Amino acid sequence: MQRDRYGLPLSTGSAAARDAYVEGMDLFLSANAGAEQAFARAAAEDPSFALAHAGRARAMQMRGRGREAREAIAAARAAANGCSDREAGHLNALGLLIDGDGPGAYAAILAHLREWPLDAMIAQPCCGVFGLIGFSGRAGREAEQLAFTDRLAPHYGDDWWFLAQHGFSQVEAGQVAEAERLLERSLAGNPRNANAAHIRAHVHYEAGEREDGLARLDAWRRDYDREAQLSCHIAWHVAIWRVEAGERDEAWRVFEADVAPGGAWGPPINVLTDSAAFVLRAELAGAAAPDGAWQRLSDYAAKFFPDPGIAFADLHAALAHAMAGRGDRLARIAESAAGPAGDMVSGLAEALGAYARSDWDDAVALLAPWMAGHERVGGSRAQRDLLEFALLGALLRSARTEEARRLLILRRPVHATAPPLAGLSAARG
Image (cartoon, rainbow, N blue to C red; front, top):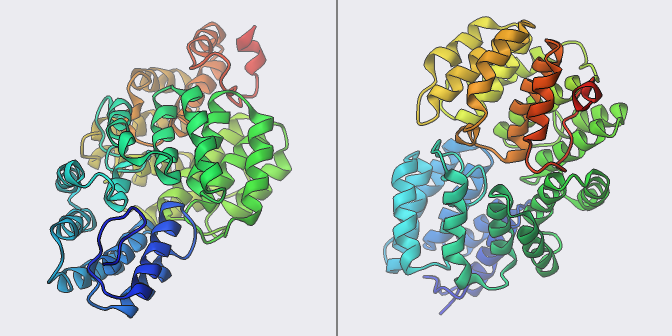
């Protein structure tokens, strides 16, 4: 009997199909390029191997290719005769996810993992800040994420994929020292695990270790495929560290080559959110954006996210539209945002409109109420710092330096990466 990389039985008699499937798992779980092709080879070796089709569907979904993902999951369902109970549950959970039923997929995943905790391809959609928990819009989702990986930890031991995911949960819950130990073990197990390299950057960020983080991540990414899942986002970390270090020309070079639309490949949600966040952070640091930058990002957002529905994308689309002066697009988000975090998206869209108009007092009044619970909008703490930095910028520009100073004192932790704000020294006193 063939088994996957975690020892779970597979309903294929083909060793070649099994080998290609395990290769696909390794590439997918390490966020490296080639997973889709490996799963396709597994399906070609054994067209009745349903999990190979399902793996390909999930890999395509992660790359923002929804129509093709739905076609692949349909092929998986058509090949499901003869599957084991474990594989049938696997297909059901992934099918719900790819069909767009997030709550149903989450419930199915939790039930499935109670019986088969080592089914990593089913655990993966609930891991990270872009997963079903991360994008749930629920208050307390960082604690929920940590509880999820805590429950799985006894089953995975020193597995390099899981160590990185558990470490990310710890970083987001403020357990940075604990996360650092897990991430070092993950990288020892697989030095080319892009998830671990990326999450290790979050450890450096939270600890205020800009120089070490930049040197380490910039060196690691030199051998990382530009078509891989995290290429754009890893470059974003490098670019924001460059701009914080005052290396403005190099920061903009990295941005244009590896983050912005037309640069390195990335899922549209990463391209939009990373690009908008970088441009605002650069402007806050005094590094003026090129002419037309916000208009380009507004057009990108309108093309790939025309209708509100994903809070984290909607927030950054609202930022791009506001800064580009596209009030019609901004109003659509403010008026149509829905879902668990829809109220926050609407409120922040209004706040960003005030910010873009340089109405600093209104921007402060509209941003401040959302600071305590902005985890609901999704993304990592490092990404959501954008909101705190915007508030700090508005406070400084309205000459409210004492309030800016108090906000800085409350930042977590006190030694965390300093906001890249021109005029910050006045607030620090």
